[in-house]
Length: 250
Image 1 (cartoon, rainbow, N blue to C red):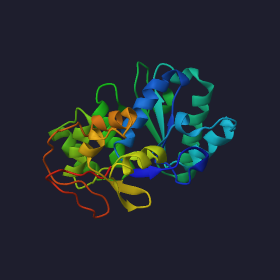
Image 2 (cartoon, rainbow, N blue to C red):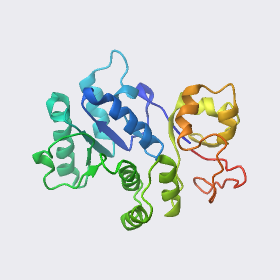
Image 3 (cartoon, helix red, strand yellow):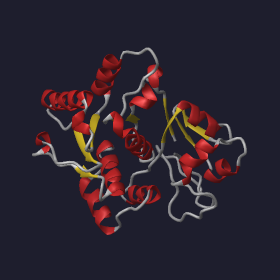
Image 4 (cartoon, rainbow, N blue to C red):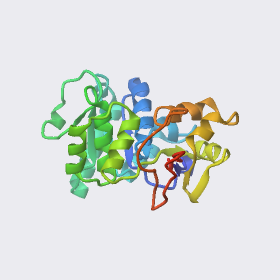
């Protein structure tokens, strides 16, 4: 698992700034959480903006520091003044930096807006988990050929299958967590690999009475209790895991 400080204490640049309508907070929260489980550090206003901070200043800084700006498009997106400003800033960054910055994500009933006419987008309405895998691949500069071949051969239908897919093309996935969640998992037997990375046994977390339901529910989709998972061990930066009990670096 990879630890990030959120809010005013954040010192690392996020992989993705998630731009969304306030009416789509539920969709945005699920998407951001799922991307965290796909080794992607997402900046989400609900996790980052503290009481008393300037919305304009905080949002502008986060958009500038994030590597990508994901635009969550639904029927509500174009009705918001804030979201219109954000996609215009993303397009401006693209021109200034001469690279892809905006990642259009369709997750709702919407006509494709004019500013996306010549852009490839990810349609999360019909290929949600495949879309997550594509986003993770882009964030980590994985081979587009390998990602698409793996998606054709076995399109994922849950987060666990995304992990299997990423492993099959040579990438060792992990989960991005805030410091409080990271510390809670460490407290029940996690092992630090470095200041911001650790590994642990999922079964120990599920079995511990000292772990909150919040943490257990976060892990359940990727690491269900007492599920036997076959395949190679998980790791990061050369750290290998035991197959028998499959301790996971997430």
